[in-house]
Image (cartoon, rainbow, N blue to C red; front, side, top):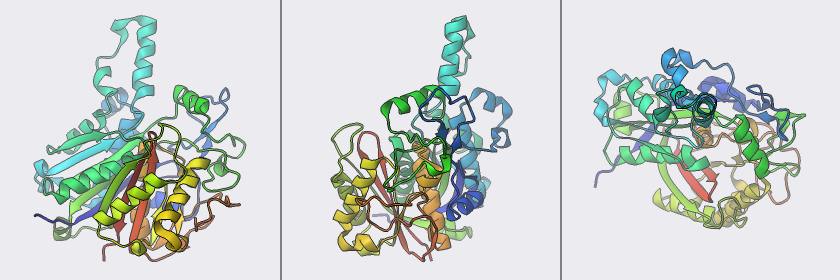
Length: 414
C-alpha cells in the first residue's frame, strides 16, 4: 500500500486581527483582539452591535476588478487567501503538472448578502430583467473553488465542503487524504465566510448565542471565563498549501507542519444543543489518535474550539478530562476565538494557520479575556498572555452546528 507523508508548506490568512501570516501571528502572540463595533452597516437596531470584521482589505489586489464587482465577499476572501498561501509556499505552479494539483474550499454562509439578497431586492423592485446574469453561479458555494482553479490554472480534482464551523478542518483532511493516496502531489485548501450583514445578524441575535458586551468589544469574546455571555461573530478566509513530503523537500520548501491524522464524530443529539458530557468529542479524539498511531501523552498542545458559549466550553473541558485523564491538566490549551471571534467555516482555517505557526515558532497563543476562569473549565487555558513552549505534536478541535466534532493532529517537522 502506498504510504506518503503529507506536509503544510504555505499559509494564507485574512482575519479580523491581521491580514497575512506575519501580521496575524504578531496579533495572536501579543493578545490583540480584532473585535470592534460593526462598521459595514448601522448596528444600532441589534442587541449585539459588535463583530470581527476584516480590515484594510482590497480584493482588487488579488482579483480582476471586473470579477470582484460580480462576485461575493466570501469569494474575495477565498481567492486572496489561496494566492497568499501559494506565494508563501514558494511553489512555482508553472513547474507543476497542474492536473496533479487539487483545490478544495469550504463555506457556511456563502454569498447570501452581496449576491443573493442584493439581487433579490432588485428582483422585487424592478422585476426579473433587473437580475444580473451572473447571479446564478455567484451564489453557489462552489464558485470560490471554481475561481481559485481558474485563477491558478489548476485542472486536477476539486471540491467544495460545508460542514459548518468544522469546515476549516474538513478541507485540510480532503487535501491530506488526496495527497496521501497519491491522487495529487499538491493541494490548495481553505475556507471563507462573510456572515456580517443585517439579516444574518438578526438570526444570530434571535438564537441568543451572541455576546451583548457592546460597550467593550475587545473584551466580549471570553472563552472559559466565568463572566462570558456568548460568542462573537466574525469573518475572513484562510488557506494552506499541502504537499507530499518528498515533493516539498525536493524543491526546498519551508515546512510548517506535518499532517498526522483527522477524525470527526457527531453528538447525534440536536442541531443546536450540545452534549455537555463531551462524549462525541471523546470519540473523535480517540479515532484521531488511533489513526495516527499515537498515545495520549504525545499531545503537547491543543488549539481548542473555545467559542465562549457556556455549554460548548464545558462540553469541551469535560471531553478533554475524560479522554486525557490527569494528562489533561498538563496540556496547554488555548482559544484564538478570544481574539478573532467565530468566523464559521473560516474559523477552523484560522486555527490551522495559528497552530502551524505555534509549532514552527515555539509559542502557545493565549486565551485573552480569561480573567476569572469558570470553575467548570479548570484546565490550563493559557490565560491572557502567550507562552514560550517548544512542542512536537498539536491537536486542533472544532465543533459545528448539528453536533459535529472534528479533530486534526499536526506534528512539527524537524
